[in-house]
Picture: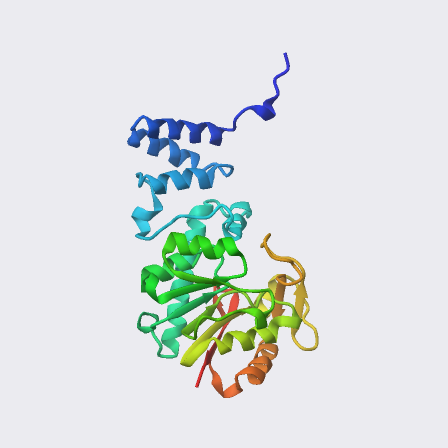
Length: 297
C-alpha cells in the first residue's frame, strides 16, 4: 500500500499540536518542554514562539530580554533570518539584531553629544514590523516613539503590540502627511534601497520632518557593502538593483542601493547644507552600513 507522505504532519506540526493539547489540559511545564522543541522547527517556529510568549512559559524570550518579543508572521526581516543559511537560530538572531541596532544608535548619538535617553521624541521611519521598535520602546517608553512605514500592517502591528503612535508613509515622499516634527528622525536601511529618482527627494522630506535643533540619522550601503556584493558604482558613486528582501513593496521603488560617500555628501549639501553634517561613520551599523547624522539649525 502506498502512503502519501506529503499529507502527513511534519515533526514541527506534531510537536506544535502536542504543545497546544498540553496547554489546554493545564500542563504548562510539559507544554513548555514540547513547544521549545517545536520552536527549533523552521515550519512552525513563529507559531511555537507565539504560544511560548503568550503563555509566558519557561524558555520565553520575554523573560530573558524584558521586552515584548511578539513577532508578526508578515515580518520580512524575520523571514530573511529564517531563510538564511547562516542563521542557526532565527529568533535569537532577529531579536539580537534589534538590540545591536539600539546600542549602535546610542553610540552614534553619544558621538554628537545627544544621548538617546534625553531625546523627547523619536520618529522611526521605515520601521517595518518592529524589529528595532521593541528595543526603542524599552529604552524610551512608547509615549516618546512614533513609527511610520509604507506597509499598513507594519504600522498597525507596532501600534497594537508596542503601544506606540504610528502613521502611514507613501511611495512618493511628497505625499507623506507628517503629523509633526521630531527631535530625532531615525531612518535605518531605507536609503540602501531607494532608486536614484527618489533618493534625494526622500532625504529632503525626512530632513523636513526634523524639529529645529534636532537630528536626522540615516544609513547607506557604502564601499564595504559594494565590495562584499561585487558591485561597481557608476561615475556618480551610485548603483541600484530592483531586488530586495521585502515582498510587500514594488522592487522598482524599494530595491537594493549602494552609494559612495561622495554621492551621499553631495546630496546632503544640496538638501541641508554641508555645514549641517554633524557626523559620519563608515560601516557603523552591523559593521556593514555607513551612518550619517544631520543637524537641523
